Length: 470
Image (cartoon, rainbow, N blue to C red; front, side, top):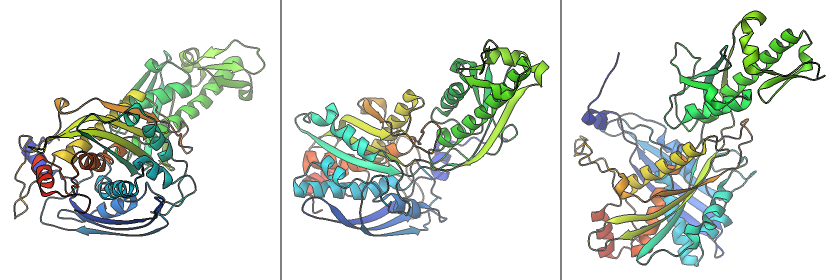
């Protein structure tokens, strides 16, 4: 069965991210140390309750080491369509409140905004606001990467304002399965159940190639359905390369044990005398010439049959993700139009398995965040009916609206993954909202508290003289 929705039906029925009203209060000493936080997060939940308040509460002050805090979260059921997860759900709104406040603290104290964040930066062993102790994380590395970047060290162009913000997303693991089959010609097929929405197939192939010691072009990654692959949770929470990749690695390691056993049969020796390295079996005593993977698979029919295996696991230890971003904007004081002139993002990827795809995820998150911050808005009438169900009236950014998004991939390996992977898909959308608000304030002196920061709203803030106290 196949269901195809019209664009209007997609807008009306598939659910936006929740609307929110968030109030944050921070206390800091004269040297910039944040000592206390109070946050009240209220999220719309459409016609049914969800998890939005919980997620927002987890993220609202996580980029800061705050000893004393009270965080309250509420969900309000309203007469609107159900809400749905949209890239780091609930976190961007929470960051919008907190990171505009930290910008105000830095300004009032005359501190560099990066230095203030470094002073309050959590690290390994500190207690996260939502309970656990932080494992190895890369927030400090991201802050230092932006601080040392050519963008941040240069002066903004005349008439431009600059904003900085940081963002957090916890990432998840969940259940994944992977099947790896070796073919007689020495190639491999990797079958997983994670739909590829960000380049995960290429990452699966790269990890399998690394484990087996063969060329990545000899790997065919396939996304199967529930009839051909073991249970796999949906692609969410920046989990695919982390969790499903872990299953691929586990399957390949089991295959290496099988390959050693087949080589032992061919050499008529004990399997303990066979080692696997660089895509070939070697005899520890040097009595036999090495056997490449293709040589072993070619004889599979005579040494025990096809070579293949499946691994299923519930992945634990997803590494928390952080991103720090800096943006320069110009603002037309006659129309309120904001133009993004330059943008740089630094993000901890753990280990970037496929750097080009990691860069694409970072840029995609930023662009979606820019759209959210400056233009995108669901407009409902008094009865909860959407009034702008189409791209003519729902404005998303296009290429001509944007500069090249500059990226800095920070790699602080996640110790809980065999290759150090931590999810990269979501955290990039978190900082743009406060970063752009801070940049607009730097350019105009206007402090905007509501989204989107569309031309009419920006113009109203400028003409009303709405500064830090607004």
